[in-house]
Image 1 (tube, rainbow, N blue to C red):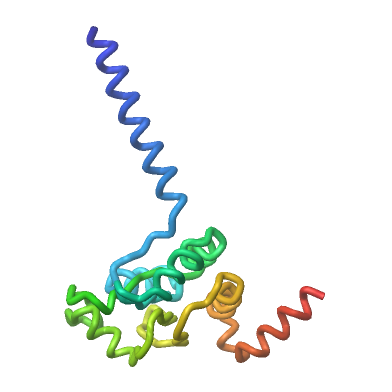
Image 2: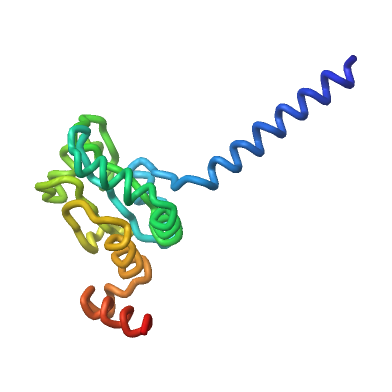
Amino acid sequence: MKTILLSVTILLILTTVVADTLASGDELVWHPFGKAIAKAKTEKKHVYVYIYTNSCGWCKKFWGQTLTNDDIESELDGSFIATKINMSSSQKVEFNGEMVAERQLGAMFAVRGYPHSVFMTGDNEVIAKIPGYLPPEKFSPVLKFIGGGWYKDMNFQEFQQSENKLKK
């Protein structure tokens, strides 16, 4: 009887561990803002900040069609640490050693419309800010441009031209 109980217990533990492992590999992890900056600095990655509001239809579309797209999630996971800022929230997040409300953080980035994408270094340097909805096929080149560090050597138009030449 003890052997059966021990076997069932071990089976349940293994099932839980395997299920957690499979689930964690399927989705992009969204980190709290302060932790995302620290993690990006440690891992030498860029930070992707998704700024949205609860009542924004375009934000919901951007989330549902672009940010949860498998290819986009994979690109984000490869070169970025992802975080979200809800402009409808007064929840406090860490920024430069201070605790500020999420909506204040959006104001610090001078965000005027939603959704808004902000790309940063792990040293809090803003690389680019992109307002509005982008479908996956338009957002993917942006991720490649910034994630690959191409922004350091050329502008986005030059990057797109070089990408187009490679496709021919």
